[in-house]
Image (cartoon, rainbow, N blue to C red):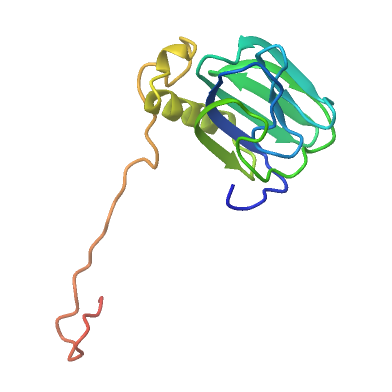
Length: 171
């Protein structure tokens, strides 16, 4: 990471492991894989811990929310579990720590991400990395990628032709 992230709110990762083992992919105490080879979300000495049955050796999109009092783990758009811990994870300060595998992309947000925005980012990542078939059939971006920004409009008023300056001036 370019800088330490003291209070992450959400992270989305595209990754897979090549060996079973617990990992702190983003440093600190944030664990995303278990010793038995499944994805999980834990910190603060596994309080909270949200475990999945999904093998971590296949490509997946993980989305984790880390708000005080509300933690969630989604894998490929499916909510795996939630918790209500009142702590935040230790600051995130590195990538790939205690991790054997491949990381395609990591996105970290310091502000909370809405439900629909999370789905947009999942859809973007799924289409970018060829994982759209892994999204649930009811995911809004399973069949086509999301659009960001909406319609863009540029209004041009021209240049004031009456100026004597060497630099154009807008009217």
